Image (cartoon, rainbow, N blue to C red):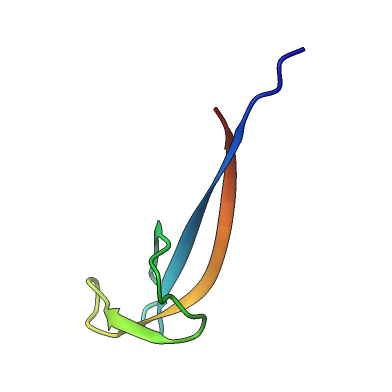
Length: 59
């Protein structure tokens, strides 16, 4: 009867090229796929953006 509003939140997955550890975080302006980002907190390797996606939730 009543339609629920759907909200989509964009997320970015960063993965370490050395140890493979993945971190999910909210999308930031300027995120680009397959670009080296920061140092890995686990092994000091470099992280790369592997995936950008959205998740929808009802409000």
